Length: 103
Image (cartoon, rainbow, N blue to C red; front, side, top):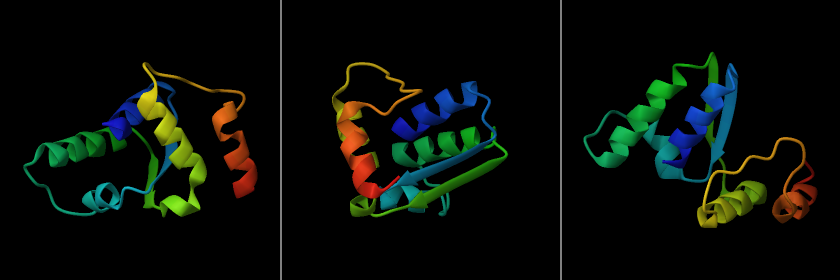
């Protein structure tokens, strides 16, 4: 559901090229596989439809240990009560991870 929400939000920005990294291997693999009939599969198909609004989409698997910034963001987002957006500066809770990863 979070991927679908992100795609819907990014679509409004009129961005043409996007890249997602995920440590949810099951999700990344689902985009390579055939259609199923579960709720999960239907959500994947919804995301695939949203992918059509972009010129270029890269959706790749990365190990959680290789992307502590994404992990910290996902953990914090899970506990937030509503949508948040940081446009000009990284929030404090991930600044140290950004420095550690050398981004």
